[in-house]
Image (cartoon, rainbow over all chains, first blue to last red; front, side):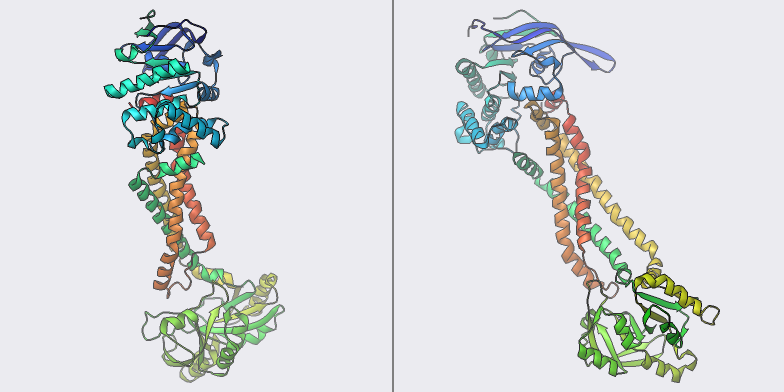
Length: 233
Length: 385
């Protein structure tokens, strides 16, 4: 896949550092990271375990905080937002795709996709329209009344993708989205993510170990011991 | 609505665990309610006593008697509207295990002073004109199958011999708390016999019942009556009927305190068990709570889901416990009818049962709620891996 010309930066990271405290020891995870992501970009973050890629993804998605530096997403400096403001910001701007799908087991596929819409002011009818559209995008209209336990891993991840896009967020973040899937289902999910990027212009940031998954991205960045290398590919 | 659905489905997610928790709370609430009802039954005499009645007895002890001649003097005390009197008879029907309270009373004034014992005019008339007549409570008549006109023989323990009576009336209680297990008959019938057998015990009564024009006069009349007989051979102690009944209850105060304590301990135990269940539940769902927060739900949303689930389980147990308490109370009431005349679940007990269940749910949910609401998202998401 080839990189598109950058129209506008959607994510801007400046001098980002993060460390964890392990007992009396401070372990640096990210060190002075600076990079930008264009709108409509499909970025893959790669690196060995413990390199800090998931931590970086969490910070970009507003579910973790950096020790220093700034993170601007869609023009909003999220490093300065309070927990409450961050929660509201996430509800509108970020769609999450997890390795283990993280669906609510007691809710049907339809209800799982509807969950983030409860935080919007949409009416019941409007929510139904949004959910049906999202499930149609992932081709699961006929499984909307199924519970996660009644779906295969690939289908569950497609429900999770529908949940991620149903609010039409600014960015999609995916943490090892194919890590728990067989080869066929993984291809299916990656194809779907590629379609979301191409046809719907979604900006996607994906953490992966899988080189085949990274091949789908426009751009691959490597993290090694908390330091980001120059653009790959 | 959506959140309620999520709470209810979560509550029923582990059916066995949830069912055991609900049954546990139900049993605890049932035990709490029944023990409270038992304590209330203990206080029945106190609760059903009238504020406008006084009891005068021998100042030394209830065992010592008072001269029957006091009646006229007491009747003349200002504020006293009626005076009745009687003796604890202590008769036994066939076997000592068939215990029930039985009194020899002055019938006309006694019925005037106790309007809660409801007789038909025919029964009342038949009782008053028959010196061997007796009146029994509805529950007592049902217990022994006595009907109007039946002959009943009691074996005297305080007043030896076989005493024959004819049932002239079966009274119903006008209130739910009225004791329907009593047996009373003519004091004259007792006194005539005593005159012949043990003359020195004749013309003496165990207690006087005084009717007051107003409950406000209780203290004044009590002092006046006791003052009249001060320094006599049989000094009196006059007190309200409530205080008189309380003196019996206070003899068993330690048992009541123990029963109350046990009822609270039962609730505390189930609180700990429910708290453990909820803590286990919350621990298992940390990743789900983290996912909710990732999607933009705030700590309060997650807190509502966890706390709601705890309340749903506890209140389901509470409602089940309340529902079971009615048949249980009926069964216990039947079994213990000779010791506990009235064993009914009151509205107050139901409210307290539900309050206890709510407190169990709330306390059990506090820690898991706090944990769910304050979970760090990144840490929570790591739990699923």
